Length: 97
Image 1 (cartoon, rainbow, N blue to C red):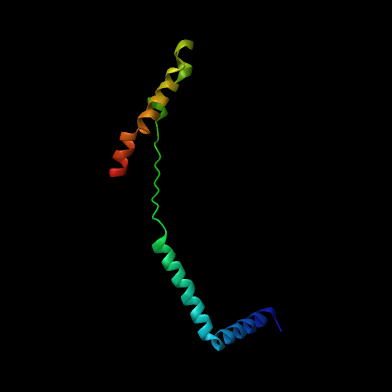
Image 2: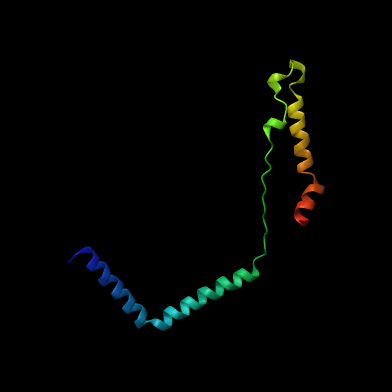
């Protein structure tokens, strides 16, 4: 006997067992479905969102082209933008929209 014939016989055998005990199989399926449905209604709803903000590097000043005393302004600008983006007012507006 080849392996595909053996698999076919196994499937037929399992199907015969399911048909023989169809009420047991049906009651187990209904119980699992009911538990999953109830869990879906009971569990709290959790909403999650994310966004990506892209900053064009061409709009920012290249620190290598500046003098040695001005290299930190780009870092300060990025920190300022981060504070504005993550402020409570901005996040509230995003949530409302």
